[in-house]
Image 1 (cartoon, rainbow, N blue to C red):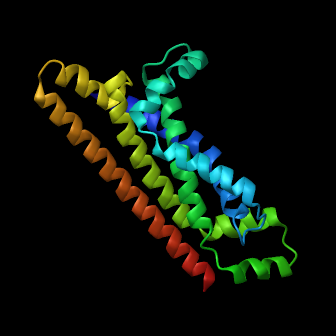
Image 2 (cartoon, rainbow, N blue to C red):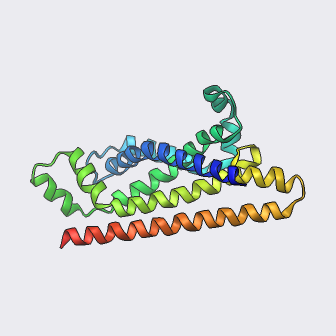
Length: 215
């Protein structure tokens, strides 16, 4: 049980970090290429939006199976904890891109205009104004994404993904041991609840800090 918990935490956090590194610039591009953005471009925006929509519409289990050849080509195997990091990361990216786009698109246009008048470059506006102003909400989005990834990692146990999901399937379901299944569910619930509490506290602290800076 403990090893399964460590595996779940490991592949969830690695997937979160890698996917967020990719999704942050992509989400910014989607936000800034829409009408009214810093780099309005209908073609690029349309293509990226369709790719994101397609990525979000694919069920995770089907995505895992579809990526078996790609995963095996990269790391030599399509099952196990390390192998599941790849589909978990790919699955999380479209979800994160949409969250990031919506968050960054809520910046008042007057703030952007004021920054342009002060001579700020577009890159500076994105990083030091948009990202900085929406940091609490971006952190909240990270917490939401992590919880979703943990849920997906449990589903990955059905196809030998490792972690608590695989532990529940192999030692619980296949052996008709419903105690193991119940224990796995309880552990996942406790883990998600703890992460949600930590995330909420961090978001509140960042909101409080931003409020103090404004005053």
